[in-house]
Every structure is written in structure tokens, then in C-alpha cells.
Length: 246
Ligand SMILES: Cc1cc2nc3c(=O)[nH]c(=O)nc-3n(C[C@H](O)[C@H](O)[C@H](O)COP(=O)(O)OP(=O)(O)OC[C@H]3O[C@@H](n4cnc5c(N)ncnc54)[C@H](O)[C@@H]3O)c2cc1C
Image (tube, rainbow, N blue to C red; front, side, top):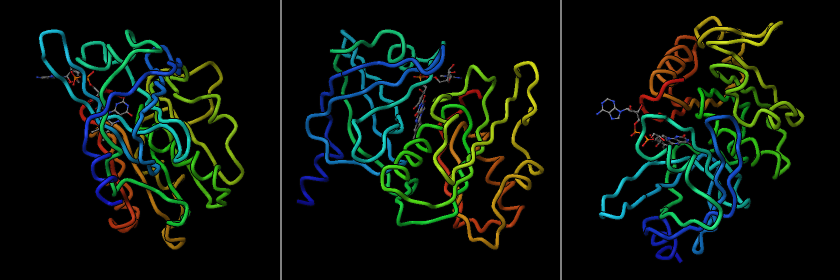
């Protein structure tokens, strides 16, 4: 049994795209049919491999956007000068095949049994694994209190906006828009900083669990602010997507 699970995680498999959904102008959610899928935990990712006609291969990691038990999905932001994300977001269609391996990762995961309260901090597409955690919480009927602080460039760049506009009971979603705000915007309008963390974070005494995900610079700034606020490092889990803008 363990052998099967290991083989499933480490072996490249051909996945078929079942549908592609637009989240924002630059972001698509890609639903995949993976024949030998062993199941996953909220927060894990897959590796995606593309092979060009001349044999050149490129691999990138993408967080799983769906909760355990839901159809496998990834959500990809298009970086116009990137190698892989423009193909995934602009070229891929239902019926196409890509190679994946996973699920991968045992650290940046949340199971309802891990409890909370939860502080989720997302920068841009860093929302993806946190969304899987929120969906997992709902699916299993968890009542763990959650605060999600989500930093986006503009309101139009907010991924899963409709879903986040109707949070489950016990979930508070707080947005900050770093570059452009709609008229009349009264929310945060700057990058996440220590003052914002102090206003949004659960008190240290409530022994919260924090998950921060996004561009490396975002994650490092947020994690430092949380430590300065008094969160023990062992209660802060981080996932860095690389030097992508936010
Ligand atoms: C665990 C994990 C999970 C992730 N999950 C997601 C996810 O859910 N959604 C998502 O959208 N992304 C996710 N990412 C990021 C993803 O793996 C890719 O890095 C991203 O899609 C960009 O890939 P790309 O091939 O399009 O861009 P790349 O070709 O890799 O380029 C990325 C950026 O780096 C710049 N660059 C490339 N080469 C150089 C160079 N030599 N010098 C200077 N700059 C350079 C490019 O201009 C571009 O802006 C995740 C990353 C990790 C590690």
C-alpha cells in the first residue's frame, strides 16, 4: 500500500484537462483527470512537466486548488514573460494532456484536525493552497475560526473573488489592494506590513496557526512581521512561489 502511494507521488502521469475556467484576466483554473490519483491534502502541490516537439522539457510546481476529495485542479497566473504559465493559461484546452506528478509536500498542509484559529496570508496566486484549506474546512464541517488576509494588485486581480465574497461561517476575508482601488474603496490599500498584521492577526495567546503563501518577498515580509508580533516560528508555515510580482 505504502509502495503504491510512493509510486503515485513520484511517477509522472499523463493527466487530461477536463475544463479550464477563467478566474481573472491573467488567471485560469485547470481541472485535471489524473488516472492514478492517490488523493491529496489541502496545501500540497503537483509538479507539471511540458515537453516541446524537439524534446525540450520544462517543469514547474503548482499548488492544488481543490480540497481533498474534490476533482484535481490547479490555478495558474500568467506571467507574460514566463516559459510555462503562458502555455497553461492561454493554450491549454479541455481534452489536452499534460504530465503531472504528486501530490507533493507534507509541511505546508492543513488538516481540520490540526485546529486553529487559522491566520491565512496570501499574496497574489498564493491564495491557491489557502483556498484548498478553506474548501477542506467547509467540506468536513470544521468550525475552526479563520482570518484570511489577501493582498492583490487590484480588485480585478482577486482570484476566486465570488467564492471569497461569500465566506463560510467563522471565516473573515480581509483584502488589501496594493496598486489600484475601485472608487469608494475603504479597505487596506498598501502592502502587508507590521501595523496591518497587528490589526488583523489573532492574538498570540489564542495559539493561532499561520500559513503564508505567495511571492518570496511577500512571504518573507509577512513571516518577519508575525514573528515580531509574537507568533512562535513553529506556528508559522510558509510557501514561496518564487520571485513573481504581486
Ligand atoms: C510549491 C510551489 C507552488 C506554486 N504554486 C503556484 C500556483 O498555485 N499558481 C501559480 O500561478 N504559480 C505557482 N507557483 C509558481 C510556478 O511554479 C511558476 O514559478 C510560475 O508559474 C512561473 O513559471 P513560468 O515558467 O511561467 O515563468 P518562468 O519562465 O519561470 O519565469 C518566472 C519569472 O522569472 C523571470 N525570469 C526567468 N528567468 C530569468 C532569469 N534568468 N533572470 C531573471 N529573471 C528571470 C521571468 O521573467 C518571469 O517573470 C508555485 C511555485 C512553487 C514553488
